[in-house]
Image (cartoon, rainbow, N blue to C red; front, top):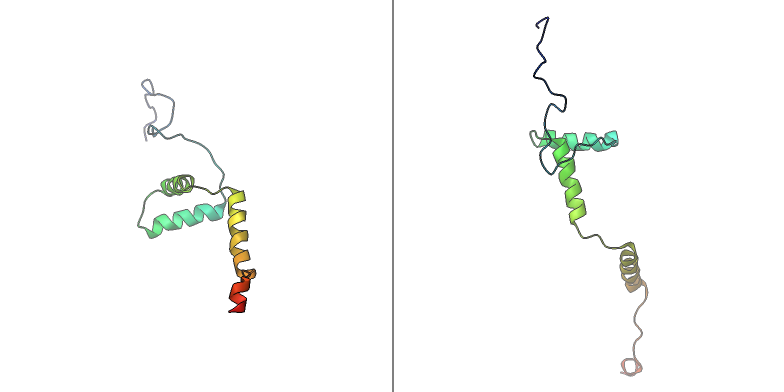
Length: 95
Protein backbone atom coordinates (compact mmCIF):
# COMPACT_ATOMS: atom_id res chain seq x y z
CA UNK A 1 0.00 0.00 0.00
CA UNK A 2 1.08 3.55 -0.60
CA UNK A 3 1.75 5.83 2.31
CA UNK A 4 -0.14 8.66 0.60
CA UNK A 5 -3.27 8.55 -1.56
CA UNK A 6 -4.78 11.35 -3.61
CA UNK A 7 -8.45 11.80 -2.69
CA UNK A 8 -8.97 15.12 -4.47
CA UNK A 9 -11.32 13.57 -7.06
CA UNK A 10 -13.10 11.31 -4.57
CA UNK A 11 -16.82 11.55 -3.80
CA UNK A 12 -18.74 10.43 -0.74
CA UNK A 13 -21.45 7.86 -1.16
CA UNK A 14 -22.12 4.21 -1.75
CA UNK A 15 -19.43 2.16 -3.43
CA UNK A 16 -22.02 0.40 -5.55
CA UNK A 17 -24.80 2.53 -6.97
CA UNK A 18 -28.38 1.37 -6.45
CA UNK A 19 -30.23 0.52 -9.70
CA UNK A 20 -33.35 2.51 -10.58
CA UNK A 21 -36.47 1.05 -9.02
CA UNK A 22 -34.53 -0.24 -6.01
CA UNK A 23 -34.16 1.35 -2.58
CA UNK A 24 -31.38 0.57 -0.17
CA UNK A 25 -32.72 -0.20 3.32
CA UNK A 26 -31.61 -1.75 6.57
CA UNK A 27 -33.82 -4.57 7.80
CA UNK A 28 -33.58 -7.02 10.65
CA UNK A 29 -34.52 -10.60 9.80
CA UNK A 30 -34.36 -13.74 11.89
CA UNK A 31 -31.11 -15.64 11.47
CA UNK A 32 -33.19 -18.70 10.52
CA UNK A 33 -34.69 -16.78 7.57
CA UNK A 34 -31.31 -15.60 6.28
CA UNK A 35 -29.79 -19.07 6.69
CA UNK A 36 -32.63 -20.62 4.68
CA UNK A 37 -32.27 -18.14 1.80
CA UNK A 38 -28.47 -18.42 1.79
CA UNK A 39 -28.75 -22.21 1.62
CA UNK A 40 -31.18 -21.95 -1.30
CA UNK A 41 -28.71 -19.78 -3.21
CA UNK A 42 -25.82 -22.09 -2.36
CA UNK A 43 -27.81 -25.16 -3.50
CA UNK A 44 -28.61 -23.39 -6.77
CA UNK A 45 -24.91 -22.84 -7.40
CA UNK A 46 -24.72 -19.16 -6.54
CA UNK A 47 -26.56 -15.93 -6.83
CA UNK A 48 -27.84 -13.33 -4.42
CA UNK A 49 -29.83 -14.26 -1.35
CA UNK A 50 -31.09 -10.68 -1.25
CA UNK A 51 -32.55 -11.04 -4.74
CA UNK A 52 -34.14 -14.31 -3.68
CA UNK A 53 -35.77 -12.60 -0.66
CA UNK A 54 -36.97 -9.80 -2.97
CA UNK A 55 -38.45 -12.34 -5.40
CA UNK A 56 -40.23 -14.15 -2.54
CA UNK A 57 -41.73 -10.89 -1.29
CA UNK A 58 -42.85 -9.91 -4.80
CA UNK A 59 -44.50 -13.30 -5.24
CA UNK A 60 -46.25 -12.94 -1.88
CA UNK A 61 -47.70 -9.51 -2.64
CA UNK A 62 -48.54 -10.56 -6.19
CA UNK A 63 -50.88 -13.31 -5.09
CA UNK A 64 -54.44 -12.28 -4.45
CA UNK A 65 -54.91 -12.50 -0.73
CA UNK A 66 -58.32 -13.58 0.50
CA UNK A 67 -59.77 -11.41 3.28
CA UNK A 68 -59.83 -13.13 6.68
CA UNK A 69 -63.64 -13.07 6.77
CA UNK A 70 -63.82 -14.90 3.44
CA UNK A 71 -61.32 -17.51 4.63
CA UNK A 72 -63.29 -18.14 7.82
CA UNK A 73 -66.57 -18.46 5.91
CA UNK A 74 -65.02 -20.88 3.40
CA UNK A 75 -63.47 -23.05 6.11
CA UNK A 76 -66.71 -23.16 8.14
CA UNK A 77 -68.70 -24.18 5.04
CA UNK A 78 -66.18 -26.92 4.24
CA UNK A 79 -66.25 -28.25 7.78
CA UNK A 80 -70.04 -28.14 8.02
CA UNK A 81 -70.31 -30.13 4.81
CA UNK A 82 -68.58 -33.03 6.59
CA UNK A 83 -70.68 -32.79 9.75
CA UNK A 84 -74.21 -31.91 8.65
CA UNK A 85 -75.97 -34.24 6.27
CA UNK A 86 -78.71 -32.75 4.11
CA UNK A 87 -82.28 -33.58 5.15
CA UNK A 88 -84.08 -35.84 2.77
CA UNK A 89 -87.50 -34.80 1.54
CA UNK A 90 -90.65 -36.73 2.50
CA UNK A 91 -90.97 -38.06 -1.04
CA UNK A 92 -87.50 -39.58 -0.84
CA UNK A 93 -88.32 -41.22 2.52
CA UNK A 94 -91.58 -42.69 1.22
CA UNK A 95 -89.94 -44.28 -1.79
